Length: 350
Ligand SMILES: Nc1nc2c(ncn2[C@@H]2O[C@H](COP(=O)(O)OP(=O)(O)OP(=O)(O)O)[C@@H](O)[C@H]2O)c(=O)[nH]1
Ligand SMILES: [Mg+2]
Figure 1 (cartoon, protein in one colour):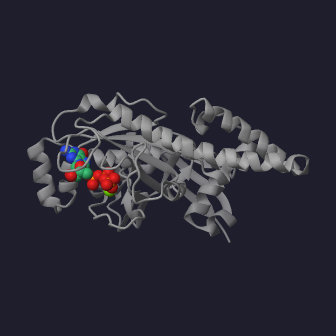
Figure 2 (cartoon, rainbow, N blue to C red):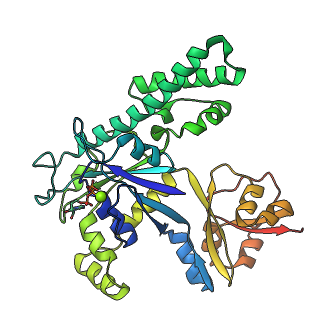
C-alpha cells in the first residue's frame, strides 16, 4: 500500500518525508519512495508479551512528490504527470505550510493553510473532473454504439461529474458496488482518503490545524523540521532529545497510523514465539481472504479460523487459556468477517 505526500511548492513535504523515513528525498523530478512501519500500540504490546524472534508491523510505501505549482504559476514538473503518479497511491497526505521560512520561496510572507489546502483540493478535484469529462465525451460520441457496460459506466460517470462540478469529492457520491467496480480504473484523487498535515513552526501554531476546510478523513499538526532532525538521531540520542523537548511521541508517526486507518484498512494479528505480525486487510474481508494474505495455501486449504480479539486477550492478561474459559475464543468459518484487532490462527490442510 502506498501513501503519496502532495502539496504546494515549499509546503514541507520533503521535510515530512524525512521525518517519516529518516531518508533523504531524491532531487529528481519524480517521487522518492521509502517504506515506513505503521506503529500500533496493540502490536507493540503483543511483541513485549511474546518477545518473538521476528516482529513485523504493517509496512507502507510513502512517496514524496514535487510541489504543485501555485495557481497561475508554472514549474519544472508537469502537473498532469505528477497527478497521474499520485493516482497510484491508495491514500494521500496533503501537506500545507503553517510555518514561516524566509529562506525558502513562498508566495506570501505569512503562511495561509486555509487557502493552500483549498488550492490543493481544487487542483486534485480539477484533475478528476478532467479525466471524467474526457471519458464522458468519448462515450457520448459513441452514442448508440456503446456497449451495455459502457452505458452503465457513462451513467456512473455522470454522477461523478455532477458531484465534481458542485465542488464535491468523488468519495461523497453514492455508488453501488457495480458502479464502483466500473470506475475503479480511474483511480480518482478525490476518492482516496485524505490526511491533512499542517507543517508547524518549532513552537506554537497548533490552532492552524483545525482551520482548513476539505474532505479530510484525518488532520494533524507536525513540527516537521524538528521531527526530521529527530529522525536522523540514533535511538539513545533520540530519547534524550525527545525528553528535552517534552515529547512523548512523534506526530509524524501518528500521521502514518492516521493515514493508514483513513484508508479504511483494518489490521489483524498473528502471534507466537516465532513472529508477532500485523496484516493489513480491506475492511469487510472474510476469513479466507485474510488467510490468503498470510499464504495462498492457507486460503486454498482453509478449514477454520481460531479467533479472539486483542482487547479480550489483553484484558485477560495475555493468557489464551483464560480467553478460552471466558468464552472469548471463537472458531470461525469461511464467511467470518474479520474485525480490526482480531488475533487469528488459521487451521488448514493442503
Ligand atoms: N519551521 C518549520 N520549517 C519547515 C517545516 N517543514 C519544512 N520546513 C522548512 O521549509 C522549507 C521547505 O521545506 P521542504 O520540505 O523542502 O518543502 P517541500 O514541500 O518538499 O518543497 P518542494 O519539494 O520544493 O515543493 C525548508 O527550509 C524546511 O526546513 C516545519 O514543519 N516547520
Ligand atoms: Mg520537496
